[in-house]
Length: 537
Image (cartoon, rainbow, N blue to C red; front, side, top):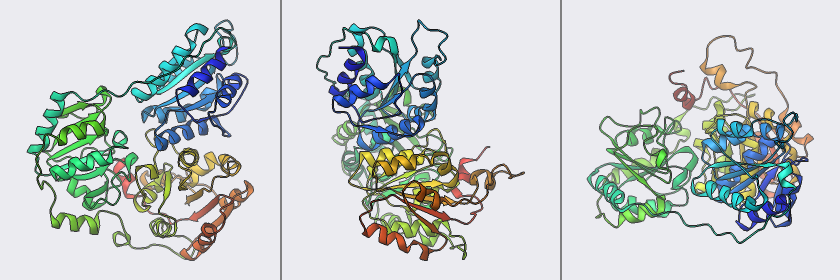
């Protein structure tokens, strides 16, 4: 068996996938080997979209996913998506073909190790047929147990070598948290009168255990943006902590005497540059990665461990108490924790719709069983704050790198991970135009995607938050609905709420084509969350 075939078979046996990519000469054989061994393959129109779709699919499925790229330029095309995944610690493997060492003048030749390392990914390489399978399994273990994005370089000459063997693959379980650390965290929680738990990506899948602990100690519940939906419909849930927080959520988090991050970095975004941390608030973190503990700010207690296992261990050491919970707090949360129409005055005109009004109406129209993917930009707080999601697998937020243009590919990966839910992509016009070619991918894969484009014909963040000549960040109007139709989608232009009536028809029908909504929005003067995000710029 040649190395390319052995690597594909070994990865399939390890249970990873699906694989997203753009196939060229260097990754042709390994991609087909994956397919031959039952790993689904999804072709995108650009490698950057493949990397982002794989990232989103990993987040929404809980699996290690794969990206397949050609050597050199295929990998460079994918780097923004790889950078996003690496900064988010997404368990993902990039199978990157590589020019052989014997051909140093090859035009495809670049330092792929250095490129991967520069964005925080882990570079690895297969160099010997006799260790190819071991090396491939080691990449899976690194991705899964260390929550890392791995770039596994596959030199094209090594791929063609024979002599590789495939043996069965077994992956060990996560280690349990150390007992002294559990006891220290339990003591800190027992002493707290107003504890708040903030769950991040590492808390996904552990909602029941974190809730049980919160019920015991009287903690309020919140999430970072990437874990939005984790505590959906819990009466003590505050929603997103950070820039998207409602005024009440920010107030209650700021008044806590203990914040515990469950797989949550407690970084500048989640804490509003530290403004949500009271002067005497104590901090604790639970994370699988020891280096993540205290990385953004000093903490009082840190526990290396899985969130679910740690929460189960801590609850066994606590007695029941009311903590931060009271009938008054519960009533306030029910009334004001979520953003609503009461928080703004509708500024829609006959030609342009208020993005808040648009988002609230779409929240009412679209089915509750949805999976919302959000691109970056001035608009992004509106779908994040106003579109409810059923759980943490209903919201996909690829924004660690803060790049616009990733939202459409994010929605592709999320839709493939959760075909049981209506996929919704929320994009700005800038991000849409960067990625418009992937509408062909959406149509070709028959994804019943709703694409909402918040279109103000500008890079709104720069227009509203920076003084000076804005001619570089404003653009002529474009007919995004027509662009959608050109790719085989249903296109709809929305200027008023009445223009949304065809959405009902599309939802009631067979949904045979994706729906692209070109929403012509008002200029909002600068979204509230970006004013906070640009603090200090």
